[in-house]
Amino acid sequence: MSIVAFVFFLFAASPAFAGGFGPWTFGMSADQIRSVKAQGPYRAFSNGGLETYNAEFGGKAQNAQFYFKDGHLWRIAIRVY
Image (tube, rainbow, N blue to C red; front, side, top):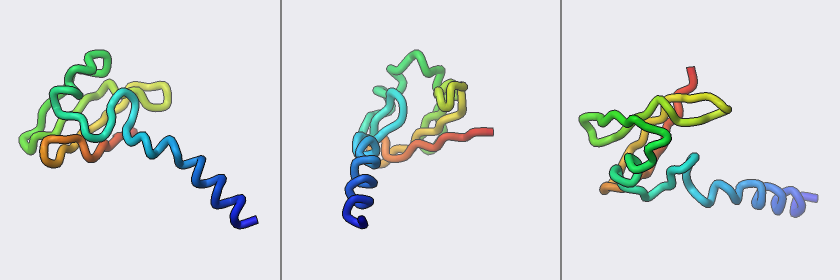
Protein backbone atom coordinates (compact mmCIF):
# COMPACT_ATOMS: atom_id res chain seq x y z
CA MET A 1 0.00 0.00 0.00
CA SER A 2 2.80 2.44 0.85
CA ILE A 3 4.44 1.86 -2.54
CA VAL A 4 1.16 2.70 -4.28
CA ALA A 5 0.89 5.90 -2.26
CA PHE A 6 4.49 6.81 -3.05
CA VAL A 7 3.97 6.30 -6.79
CA PHE A 8 0.73 8.30 -6.68
CA PHE A 9 2.39 11.26 -4.97
CA LEU A 10 5.39 11.05 -7.27
CA PHE A 11 3.20 11.40 -10.35
CA ALA A 12 0.91 13.94 -8.69
CA ALA A 13 3.95 16.16 -8.14
CA SER A 14 5.24 15.81 -11.71
CA PRO A 15 3.75 19.15 -12.89
CA ALA A 16 5.99 20.79 -10.28
CA PHE A 17 9.03 19.49 -12.15
CA ALA A 18 8.15 21.83 -15.03
CA GLY A 19 9.00 24.65 -12.65
CA GLY A 20 7.04 27.79 -12.97
CA PHE A 21 3.69 29.47 -12.83
CA GLY A 22 1.43 30.44 -15.70
CA PRO A 23 3.48 31.62 -18.67
CA TRP A 24 6.65 32.03 -16.57
CA THR A 25 9.24 29.32 -15.97
CA PHE A 26 12.20 29.24 -13.64
CA GLY A 27 15.40 30.30 -15.34
CA MET A 28 13.81 33.09 -17.40
CA SER A 29 15.53 36.47 -17.56
CA ALA A 30 13.80 39.73 -16.60
CA ASP A 31 13.48 40.63 -20.30
CA GLN A 32 11.80 37.32 -21.04
CA ILE A 33 9.31 37.93 -18.24
CA ARG A 34 8.57 41.44 -19.51
CA SER A 35 7.93 39.97 -22.95
CA VAL A 36 4.78 38.29 -21.56
CA LYS A 37 2.69 41.37 -22.38
CA ALA A 38 -0.70 39.82 -21.58
CA GLN A 39 0.20 39.72 -17.86
CA GLY A 40 1.83 43.18 -17.69
CA PRO A 41 2.55 45.92 -16.97
CA TYR A 42 5.54 45.08 -14.79
CA ARG A 43 7.15 47.23 -12.12
CA ALA A 44 10.84 46.89 -11.27
CA PHE A 45 12.16 46.82 -7.71
CA SER A 46 15.44 48.36 -6.62
CA ASN A 47 16.78 44.83 -5.94
CA GLY A 48 16.20 43.85 -9.59
CA GLY A 49 12.96 41.95 -9.02
CA LEU A 50 9.75 42.45 -10.97
CA GLU A 51 6.09 42.63 -10.02
CA THR A 52 2.76 42.55 -11.82
CA TYR A 53 -0.80 42.88 -10.57
CA ASN A 54 -2.19 40.97 -13.56
CA ALA A 55 -1.02 37.42 -12.87
CA GLU A 56 -3.99 35.08 -13.26
CA PHE A 57 -4.49 32.88 -10.22
CA GLY A 58 -7.77 31.22 -9.35
CA GLY A 59 -9.52 32.97 -12.21
CA LYS A 60 -8.64 36.44 -10.92
CA ALA A 61 -5.86 38.95 -11.47
CA GLN A 62 -3.46 38.76 -8.50
CA ASN A 63 -0.15 40.26 -7.47
CA ALA A 64 2.92 38.22 -8.45
CA GLN A 65 6.51 39.07 -7.63
CA PHE A 66 9.51 37.62 -9.44
CA TYR A 67 12.90 37.25 -7.79
CA PHE A 68 16.16 36.64 -9.64
CA LYS A 69 19.45 34.99 -8.79
CA ASP A 70 22.37 35.42 -11.19
CA GLY A 71 20.00 37.07 -13.68
CA HIS A 72 17.55 34.15 -13.80
CA LEU A 73 14.14 33.65 -12.22
CA TRP A 74 14.43 31.54 -9.09
CA ARG A 75 11.34 32.45 -7.02
CA ILE A 76 7.76 33.53 -7.73
CA ALA A 77 5.60 34.89 -4.92
CA ILE A 78 1.84 35.18 -5.39
CA ARG A 79 0.07 37.64 -3.11
CA VAL A 80 -3.63 36.90 -2.65
CA TYR A 81 -5.50 39.47 -0.60
